Length: 263
Image 1 (cartoon, rainbow, N blue to C red):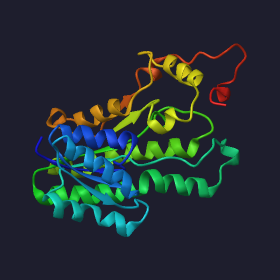
Image 2 (cartoon, one colour):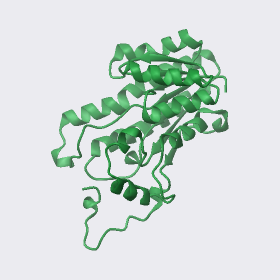
Image 3 (cartoon, rainbow, N blue to C red):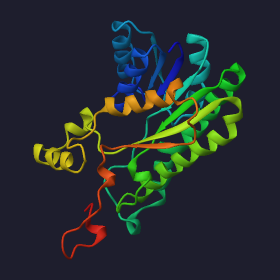
């Protein structure tokens, strides 16, 4: 590949898998994480596999630390060709709309959208200055594509993230900068695997057409496609990677109400 990538949230789970897959494909990777041990561990793994990587500790919710990411990457590798926005999340617990609070919405949009906008614009401007284009990929969610009860703020934030990629694609496309999103379904990260029972794992497996939950590597491979020249004429798009879970007609038990599907 011979390119330089920033993976924001690259120290664990899906971000770790993306860092490793991009490095294995030949990219130099700036592994950004708020926890030094995680960033350094992934960087060491890349190096052990013969790749190039640097660890950068940054809190993506801190504007000053966020602004330092692109310059630090240029200092380390000389360019920014790929940006992958991974970090996100919701507040603990599932709340119906009538119980949601303004602080929930502020937190979730800051956690999933605002930092992505700031870092993406900084990276895109650098790509324009370099004159060779580039690729921005953000990790969305099926929650931003399909409605579901009890986590409206998270779903709305991920929908906004997908829209943000479309806007970036339109505004920076003439400079050769592409922007796309990958929306995972149920992904068996180490953190998730440690929280659910074998019975819940079996139930999750049965929700997909392929009969298994996804892995972080499944998402990383989709990101690699968007980041590579294989997708050189693809921009402003969103790819659902869920093993076919959302192609199923949502049949409910007799007498059940749609709002009960996630309670």
